[in-house]
Each structure stands twice: as C-alpha cells, then as structure tokens.
Image 1: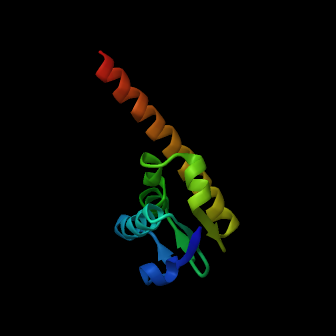
Image 2: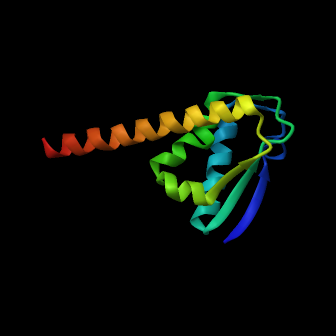
Length: 112
C-alpha cells in the first residue's frame, strides 16, 4: 500500500492545532487518501498545542465512516508527544463509543 506523510504543522500553518476548521481540512485529506487506498501518516512534529476539538474533527469523525481495524491499517501517527498521544486515545475511544451508540440508536428507531 502506498504511503504519504502529512506534516500537520505544514498543513495548518501553525504550531497550535486547535480549530475545528483546521481539523476539517485534515479530515478531508485523510478521507481522500483512504478512498485511494493510501496509508496516511500524520506527523505531529513541532506542534506545541493540540486540542480535543481539532482531534475530534480531524480524526474522531473518521470512526463514523470506517471501523477500527481498517483505520489501524490506513492511518498512523508519529512524533506525537506522550500527553497528546493520551489525548488522541481518549478522542478515539469517545468517537468509537459515540458512533457505535448512534448506530444502535438509529437501528432501534428504525425497528420501532
């Protein structure tokens, strides 16, 4: 599988990944790569500040479209600080729970 590396610093033009707008741009780049069967490596090098808002928009919403095994194969991260890695893990877990519950709720509503 082909791979591309995206420097988040270069992508957003800042060392602070905070806005949902920046997250949305990154989300669309990730989605486009995945749709072309390209593994995307997100490089967090030189980022000084990352918010849950950015991560939810850029990465969390991927779980509405793809399952965990698929994303583990198609999306990698590197050069992420330990505390930011922990934040990313929390965002991913919440996204998985949210989209799983949303799917179950919608299925139940359709069956009613």
